[in-house]
Image 1 (cartoon, rainbow, N blue to C red):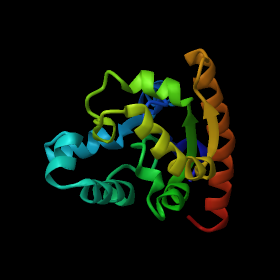
Image 2 (tube, helix red, strand yellow):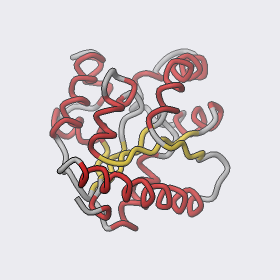
Image 3 (cartoon, helix red, strand yellow):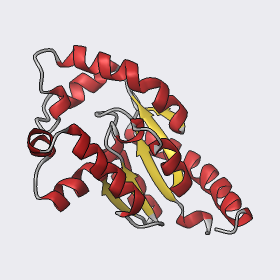
Length: 185
């Protein structure tokens, strides 16, 4: 595989900018963009809150696994992963086998501000969203930090974040392609 074809997986907590940054980065690379949450909604014909209500969170997590294991192109794609996708056992490794993984990070206050107007987040449909964010983040942070290079999105101009993501992607994609060639992939 050529380094210019390696997929990019953006992971991190909800509200860190995965879809927004992913859209710009995909455009700059000439790649397609897929948002795992949107793809699952499209395939199921239901919103994520509807999936959580009718099928439950475990069923949704299985849909995420199916999407990663075969529901998207193997190259030239930026995938904005749902916030809980990489947290599932084995998913971080599965992403790293398929491409470059970059974790976007933001402060809890920024996450609350960015997610407060979006009603399509069933995990935050609670009386105290900040407490839920704190609780979820405490569990997920160590996994996010080990998933891939961490890039802060707080208080930075969009262009700076995009350029940082592109630099890390190009460096890691070259390494990924070398490793793939060495292993005959």
